[in-house]
Image (cartoon, rainbow, N blue to C red; front, top):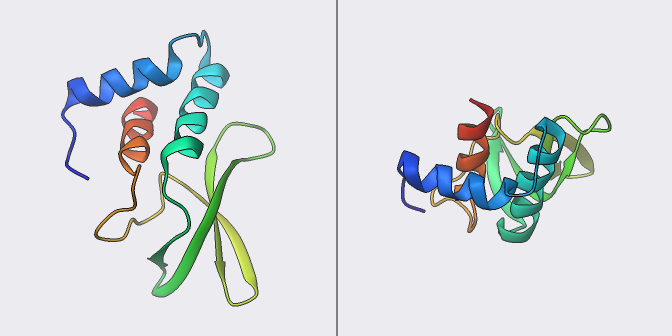
Length: 104
């Protein structure tokens, strides 16, 4: 994934939120693009331990996109904007970058 410039990120956000009129609808649009484009599963390191990101979801209140992480028999949701990405980043990670830009 190359680093996108501001215009590229804004174009992605526009694509994701074209019919969205408020925060919740815009977040849902970005979440949908993440669901469609983020290459899952992938592994990354969280607090010194390797985890597998096997999905994404919205928190029950619908306000935060979370990565569904697992290691051994344990599972934990981590806010996608706080998730450290591996290098190379998974396919579709530019949508996380667009979400981060949108969230300001």
